[in-house]
Image 1 (cartoon, each protein chain N blue to C red):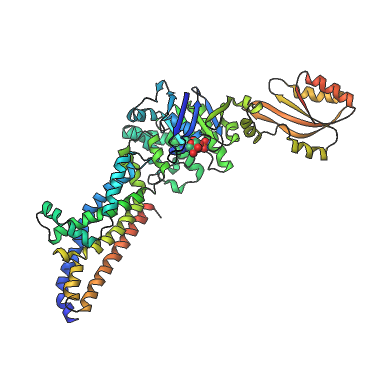
Image 2 (cartoon, chains in turn purple, cyan):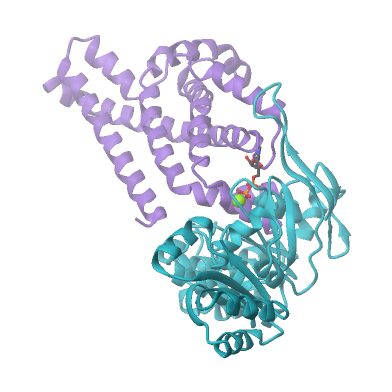
Length: 219
Length: 337
Ligand SMILES: Nc1ncnc2c1ncn2[C@@H]1O[C@H](COP(=O)(O)OP(=O)(O)O)[C@@H](O)[C@H]1O
Ligand SMILES: [Mg+2]
């Protein structure tokens, strides 16, 4: 217990690192996932920019990359991180890996949520003379906003989970803290303090995500 | 439309293509309320979606307001769509937008100035009687109100043509007549041509001026609503007509009639333009035949009357024959055996 009190500054630092790694990954991975998901939606057969080849290519890419376990993906993507960022280790490389790794999973969630929009509503926009990109911006995304927010809430929780292996490539965060000071030093109290912080994070994310989605969907 | 064919690729590899529209020619004139009736799968929705280019014709020619649209690129097609409104069975309102924003949408697509949009939205909401709902969201409205918003949205850009695909099929009877009378005003007051898709003959009867009956991707009968209702030529048309008009009793119904009424059962058919009905009754009464109305009725289609009255006649056989012969000279008489 005393040990934990001594480690409080490190715990605060780790919590802060997790927050900003998650936030940065959400921005990069979230936008990339949104774009890939939109690509899947608009090119699928019968959709507004139907394109068999493009759909198949995107679909196959997503299917290949999505199931790779993250702990392997993070190592596999390291050479690319070195190329782009100049380094394969640290929080920057971690954000890079999470953003790319999560983008494929996010794209499926985006695609599924976009598919909840009734085709009739898209048809009404087409009948009014709107073009595909205009429809995406003015109808598709606004109509799917509620479910999308719930989807991204779920994504945020997954991102917190992904940060936990940050220590593996020299990144920080709560996961690294739990392993370095809790697990390796045989101090379960410290580990459980980290667990508690994660639980609080996840609950807060869920709470605000649900509240926002409720407000958007007006129910 | 001239010789229009629309086929969809086969649903499984190696199968036959689905021919949804099988060589249809049809002319809709300005000011018409042209009803298109048919059973589910007859090709009605496909037909109407060809008109605003939501589907591309496989072959044939489609001319809208003087423009041949089958050769148009998608981009130019969008401009044509601006002059065609469309309403749907499921209303298809944007749930994320207020009523006013829904109505504004086609105007925004057309790039109209904001001030004009606001004025037009106010005008359209007043026209459909929903001025007080401007700030509401669609899920706060009843079905009838939703369709009225749909109509306001479809007419926002002042199109000359309105496509209505089963516009009342999701509504209860009372709301249906409310929406139908609104569509009637759209046609009469705004001069909008309406193509009215439905599977309900009652909708055709209350609104349409012309009707085409579709079956298996073809038009099997067409004409003035009055003519098709009073003398359907095609079996499919006759079945639709019989859903709203009690015509000649079927053999089964005749059996039932015989168990309850004595005498000879005779159907007299009337179409407007002559007041033969009064004469028929005068002639029957003059010969002293007892008669009883057992089946049928008189229908009114946009101010013109027609119908079939089936009577049970009792009296001397020869006297009835003489009366029927006399009446047969000026009216349609069918004895049911
Ligand atoms: N997108 C499509 N792909 C394949 N077949 C279709 C498609 N749309 C309609 N069809 C087929 O075309 C026929 C006519 O359909 P539709 O025009 O919707 O009929 P209706 O509106 O009269 O019920 C049906 O057999 C239907 O299965
Ligand atoms: Mg249909």
